[in-house]
Image (cartoon, rainbow, N blue to C red; front, side, top):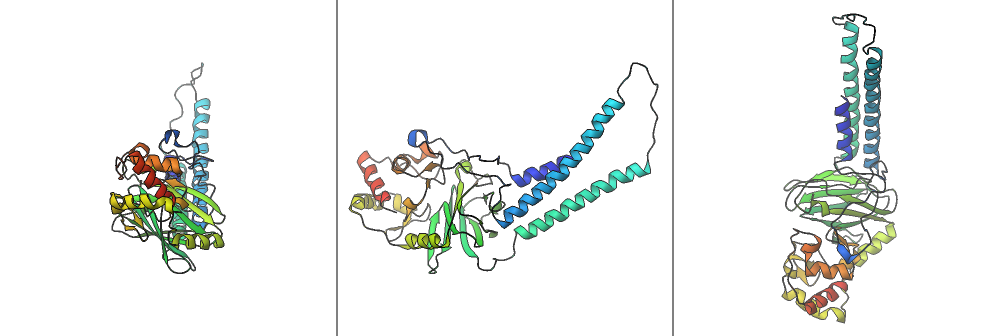
Length: 350
Ligand code: CUA
């Protein structure tokens, strides 16, 4: 019973360590940057959204019941060891007991009641966490899991669709309804402080929701093993004010500002294989990799594998495998001058 309960608790917490102030461990980025962009709170007990509150309360209930069982069982065990230890004076054979109806009934009925309580509490939590349809006034976001990054499609206030990757920006206080699909294998969308894990399955639509109560950056992690860069498939949800969200949407929908520093790089982007995989509004339509239209508005590169800055961007394009080994972006073996031009162009994608 105790083992079962503890397993339940661990199951809720997930296989990944989630302790106060813990950081998601990401691939070493060497000398590229000393800043750990993935330092953040992944603690399910620091919930900041209704589904996460429900999960936290259930986790405490299961933990409390388990702790009670542990104390009773271990207490009786220790008491028995001391009380009935072998003594110097042999007391002879102990009293032999052959069954006891009250005792048998007690240790049958009490565990049944405990299991019933845990079942009812779990069912209630599932009903609160898994809504049948989008809550009223929800912002409806499409989430597509890819090896190993996240694609987001969400409607701006104007109705136009913003396409972005790896960093979801949402307004504070508004319900967010996620429709989750996968482009390849099974992933799992999990931002511990906002909501529980939801599997992202090929050819199957799943939903989850959250409603962040405070502004800030909420981190998460793909929670279903999905290949060798599963650990570098990190989640970032930036919760901002309604005004900041509207401004962000407008900026994401704004056309590229032509910048002389990007002219050569833009030509190279179209000449090389880049355009086959990456979309840039008005430039290319690739859909295999993240949309780069407003790349520089993001905080990380490679779904959290490294912070995004000119140095890491150059290292990434030079050889993505050095930062995220096994990822689907190849090294194009560019010459230094080509590399500089492509980086200069990408830096204009603000
Ligand atoms: Cu995607 Cu693990």
